[in-house]
Image (cartoon, rainbow, N blue to C red):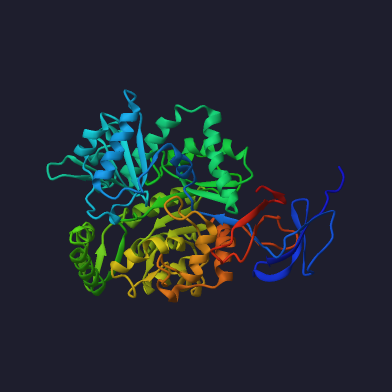
Length: 543
């Protein structure tokens, strides 16, 4: 075989090295690797490309993106435009009627009733009335709560008493389901629905469905995407898909029934691993709406006052009702939201140890400070810090931040949520008593930071996510908790090297001898006007 021709990208701004030094120049590629980073304005090569001042950045890595769920969304409807209970029931009825006598699943995603004038959700009897016997599932924007029909519950085979956390299925006083399901109950319905739908697809059609999502990722500059929880049958589908896309795919092992259930040893026996990342296992320690957190009493009083004022100004009780839906207890001078999914830390340690002893990395979902502290304690107890990732870490107090720093785990955080949820967090009275999206506080304590998306629950544009880590802009342009801002270099490192670190991978960025995996952005990566125009993986242009 002859020597491969050099590919030269010149007249660019290169973010080079593990320190991400920004410089004018270019890059020479040979045999899939970076042969040279040069400082000249132009350079000659057998295959040269003048980038006209565009930016070359390391390949973007999303260590927490629900790739499979995102790929399946085109099979359902969009609930994000609903403005009322009436809109929801009308859309459900229309979709069910279009099925005719074929009682296929009716599925919607993107429900956000907090934006409705009246936040009251349709009940199961209302859904049953319009569903005409079809199984119905509507998932909210967090993927942690949904509403269902009786037929959906029947097909899934779940009951409140059989769930590990019975509160994952809301009930009326007479013990019958209200139609609202959470966490484990929701994920079981969700994967039952996905599996039944996929049975109608050929193997080629299943692969094509996921390849469509892979193409979207490549267009955004993503070079590696990790799904934070896949059961064994979907893992096998991912292995088939990987043969047909240059996008590197990996995943965490989770329970077969649904991603919020704690995995068992059988799930480990049935699992298969990605060739692109060390094997990992996922545990859920709290939810999303139902977050395991604590805060000073004063913050709770402020939240009550704000909810009352919002209810008065809007002329309805929805803001106050939504606040009261949250369980809370008073202990000492703090208010606690008791939503830990492992009440006994010893049980979590025991379950986690079953996997760490088999060489698995620990990945733990923990939004609230109480859940994040529990995760840090378990990681520390099992001495698993170098290979663990604690995900979300939405709110933290100083004590929890110090504990987190001592455990050695990576913090995988989604600052891209700021424009969407900052107002809601402020109305809960959290700021300034807790650190929110605590990027700076963790970085200053030496914690490795990863910026991820949590797509499709959050914005899946990786550049959007790193930008919000720097400017922390809310939807109205104001700045949310500005003390937690980080620098451009820190943010870009967290969206590239940090993503790799969260997956247990080494990534030195664009240095001589490293894989030529990078993106070309048509302007400053931190400008909202700039877009990825090229994506390269291992020396090959894939977009």
